[in-house]
Length: 129
Image (cartoon, rainbow, N blue to C red):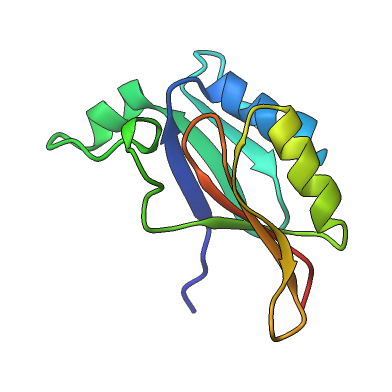
């Protein structure tokens, strides 16, 4: 059976992006390559990883749209779940994220907010279902 193994996001500064997630949400750094071009966060069964734009240019010869240079968030999100959505939201903003929508309870009962990280990633911060 195929398994979802990694979500790798190309960012301007891998160490800085990992630090944002560590400071904002208490996630632990699982790995940072000595050259600084690739790193991973310990997020459970699926790895959330960051890679440098230099590495992205090596891997994708025809290029790609950089999240940090787009006027609006790209058409995908990374969702982080925790009962304290308001706390996650405030911490993310404190460490440099930009608010897209404040925490609100959705019709299905889940608390959800959206922020955009300093490196351009669209984050959904939500309570568990």
